[in-house]
Image (tube, rainbow, N blue to C red; front, top):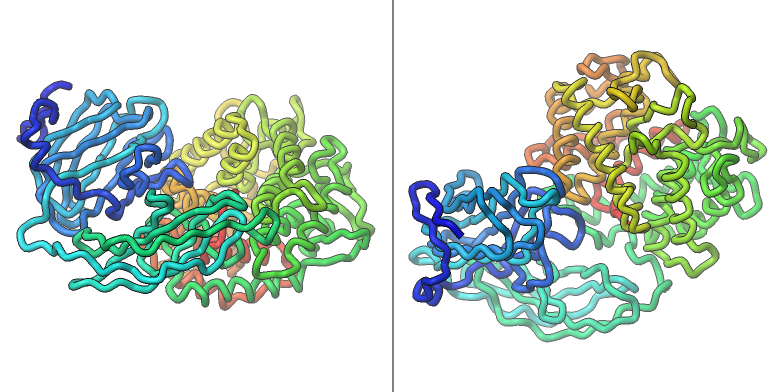
Length: 634
């Protein structure tokens, strides 16, 4: 490794300096962390400070710059930093320190990183230390098995650890999770958090006295301890060791509504107020939605979601919404599985005439498929996603094999609803090569978190390609056609050459090229991925939308209009849940938008279910589910 000069400091590798190494103290283990993004669940930045070289932080792939930050709790003198890179390493990066987490000073920089282990002697001070990567060494992202910081607290620092947390106990378990609680610890200055260990490995941190460990295996025994932490980073002794065995598969919903077993990425906002109150508001809204739209009008063991504002009483989009909602509300509604299975039977008994593994798009009052009986991409995307949720909630050993049905549905979407030339979604399985619609796509179908779930479920890397293609188009459309607003059009044409907003009516309306009754859903779909994955592209797209609409309305959600041109010109006056609700999710991605998010949440709470519009009512309910922290990706 070559000698490097950074910020006037001579930076040397530690090799050959055993005296310095001996004087260093590791001060970063288990400390709070943050990062610019994560590749997905299981790759959080805390995994790089857990003293476990089999876990790691991984950033979003293919995006520069990226960073990971450690909060040491108080000012420290920093003498050494050790980076243990996974295969996805940084070629160009800086090590920086900061007193406040805002203003940064370089203590090391290089443009010749070669991966493996970088053991660096540095000289600096600060409470925060971060790796700031500006150039990847591979096509992937940045990934660290361990990020170690060595040094010592600044003069007069607190060195007294908290007392030991007492009475670690289990408050509940499912087939894939264990919920834990303990008695609070005390400290001479103040306890700032608790770290949970499973089998000696750090699995998570919290500021409260409870935690739910997820992603476990059914009928398996696990052991836990907890340690308290103060602002200076001092840790208590370990609590009592607790042994817990997860339940058998099929014993109940694995992710009950309100359990928050799958938390969002760090930094995501939620409405002000207690979590229990927020969750209850969603349950209340769900009950009103269910009463208005969930039916058994056709007998035969079927459930349907009616669509009074659509061309036909039953449309695939409504059934897809219903399946996702029912699976998500399991635990809050004892009938959730019964409703879901009735919707599954409806899907099976109303196959697309083109691909029988897809759902026919429309049914009449006699519950018969009409208009050719072909499929619609928007409904099929949610049907497949709902089946994956159900498999995780209840397993697939019951009346219906949800996983098998999901895989067949996903593969059918790939075969007949993805354009193989552009990797963009088609409008439905009815569009084929040579017709006028083959190179048209609808932005509201671009459900990025669904693509991630399909990739996980099938193991098919083609879904990564599909996801990237759609994210690239989101960024391109925003920068090229809506640089001041970030708005997307209802439909995009000419996807085989230069994709662009529809020039006029190409399928539904003269406003097909504007932010209208389809694209109004795009802030919801983009932000669903941003809050669950931390993906840098999704975050950037959502934040662009949020910045514009907050400024456009002066922070007053009552001023969100019904439709806009891509330059932000209003199309229609009035207020409609399908248009104002999705912007709440974009607000969640911006740390400076708490008051704006609260205003949007308050407006949703004051807007009753519109029983004449399954469209607006279903969108608002699903937005409220995400806003409350209850959306999760199977």
